[in-house]
Length: 305
Image (cartoon, rainbow, N blue to C red; front, top):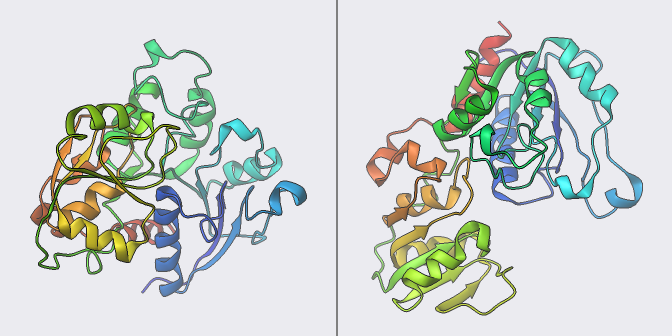
């Protein structure tokens, strides 16, 4: 067991409050930090409903062993940011770890429209901002090989200090339950056009498609809408599904739903824009992977030795 580390962790959304896919990964890393005895102080721009009124919350160690920066420029439409002085302190420390669940460091837009090809960038490429952090980092962490490939493509160079961590999804919780597979096709996640709702509905809407998630398209969709489901209900639905379909319009760094589905014995239909596919397309491949949280902390702890 490594000595306990004092860590300043900056995340735009407080992962203890918000529950998006990225925040869930960050929360799982924080839970592992707690099990290892590390002392983590979290600073966030959005830490709850009152943050819009009171502003961001900064809680830092005076002399940390590590700074970990996660999804700093999330929710770009809000126009709120961490103080530059705080980010400069992290960069100057030379004790920096960068970790993104999305594209917000490399891209100023919400959905990474260039897909890793800067030639087709519509505007506002953030590669200079990203390089300031990546070049100062002792470690740059990605959630899939595809995410790393796309970021390095935009930068135009490899990041030798990079680490790709396997999924952090709980393999003991998500498993086969032996149910009858009475749902032919299932979509899981926010139901939106950028997540591929149009393509999924066109191909599978009349073929027994079920939707699990919030519908933000503003229109009714063909198929059965199950609404938003918690993990317990979602595990049951995965175990009733034959095939989970995920066809996002924009490149996704990961795709947590794909990993959960495979662990529950589903087949998956994916396109080339799903980062999770880089970890495997079968239950056996996913179960053979080491835990992402352990891989992350083993590496971070090794940096401090």
